Image (cartoon, rainbow, N blue to C red):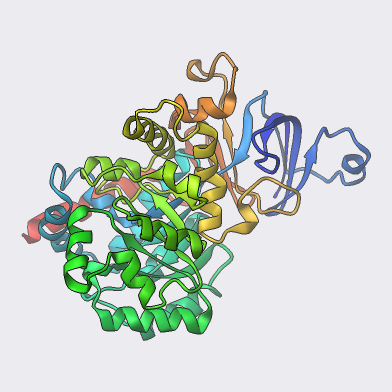
Length: 430
């Protein structure tokens, strides 16, 4: 499929936050040209177009990257709300998850993918069960997914994780895999030592939930006399980098480990606010040079898979936390939600819009009241933008969502019906 976008505003993220006007061409699954459309290179490389799209001065930009989520938890959306984190997990989430089948995860992942597309999310970093089914749902819909393992005391072995690492990194162009485990507090030392050895064997980064709630940190201090970050680092877990999801309750030593190991903090502000986990010190992290990305977390704890809401909360909570309206500039947050997420997920071929990069991009409708007048488009995306502004989402050169219509190979109503039947069956099981 060859697609020409013309009459566009283009935010490439290659040169900061400068917005250009012109054309963007996609040949198959790659961007082959960005420019005025009138220069010699454009004329010489003109191809036969399958579709030409007049952008009408709307904005083309890199897609958002959801750098931490549990997609198939869509079945628990608004099922287990208004509870503290550990009670929420142990009394509501874990018992229901035990009833999931692989087929359930396949369909529930599709439901999440649909929501990602409406939010302009072009890739996710998914930690959940039955990863074969997650991968199949992604490939069948055309979505890009980075898988990671939720290895813990309730299931999984280091040997199985290595097999998955090798399998999914050769599975399909839309699928990749990074080493991971659920959290220090759910994973015994022997498993953690085995995973650290596996990371060293493959020179691979490792990702995990880290210091999300105060009780988690306090319990680790009681067990090992160290915070989760310091303890895991003492095992050699982060010798080749990696990242932590949440990272709310971090000591100075924790932050130094993240900085020195070039690790990523993936913040989840809406989930942390809803579960009263706290506010991550993002401005402090940024000042230290720690790399940052944004994730929605799962739809049971958020409950919305909406990157616009995450961006607004990321910056506004920092301002409130520090009593400083200048804290965490909106452009920095936009970078976190796009390029930062891509870097955290090792998706270096679809982090920005540039010739030769993969065609993972979105179109933002600027012809809506919340985007007018046009004073500062990038900051307006963070402070005023919403899912209603996502006019189109393209992944790997395919338009999967446009003007409210999905092109993912399945009727949305079928997915909605299956999701409702799934949760009803689980409730009846008691």
